[in-house]
Length: 189
Image 1 (cartoon, one colour):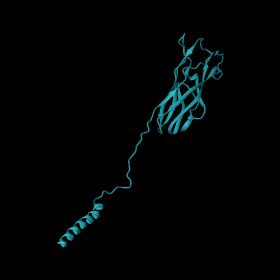
Image 2 (tube, helix red, strand yellow):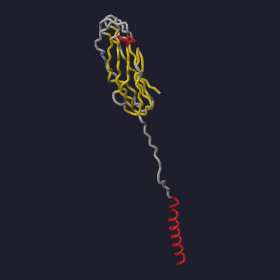
Image 3 (spheres, one colour):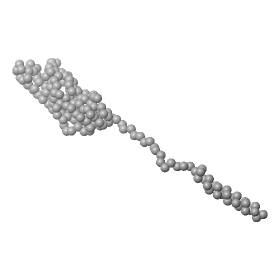
Image 4 (cartoon, helix red, strand yellow):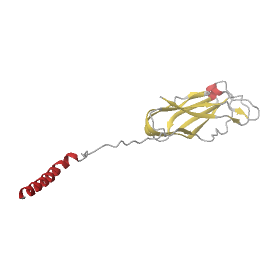
């Protein structure tokens, strides 16, 4: 009888021993690290222009001359034009102008549009952001380029002064003349 008791204890011990060796074989292997993809979207804004509400050339008396370079003229500094570019991109921009004839509010007569001059050659401060700016060439007449930006990288802004000159012909009639100076911004490559 003693023999069978020892055999039963031996069998139980062998099962217990086998169970302790078998457990790690069934355990889950845990990876030491794993990745989570993280994303963010940088929002692009808009491209806008701010311009002064009005500008006054003042009072100018015509002078009698046959030399068009000797005509009476008035110059005014148009300050406060500003560009804000929050597109967060690389596309440049260009500001152009157009001007309507200056028309006498009483008689309806217009000053020659070729007597209107634009000189955009000065900046007010340094433009902000990563960009290269270029003032336009002085121009005469109804349309022209005032300012350009290229090599743009991200948000930027700029402001400048444009000098406007209006020459008054010798035969101009007295009265108030009005015209509209429009500045427009477009994207440029």
